[in-house]
Length: 129
Image (cartoon, rainbow, N blue to C red; front, side, top):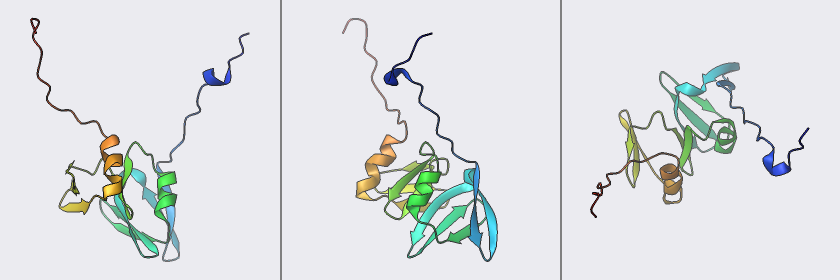
């Protein structure tokens, strides 16, 4: 039997849940991660904006970052995390979603660009070049 070195060991997959619960008005309410459009910090609270409702919770953005899959959610400013599924377009200054635009912080622009694949036009070379 071969013994694998540490470098050859398979990396365990990180599990991200499909939902979580937040405390709201004395009840624990389910938040389905796929329904989240963005999360905005406001003083001691965070506002979770979803397709059909909004929740306020006393949870830090750092806690959400640890819970949400980084392949789908990206921080675009100190006080905002967006779902890439919600984003329709973006430029140097704003992320645009359905009927909404959110500013991109200078320090977070690279994280947004690095989290998506952007295809650009490249001229084809001919055989004789």
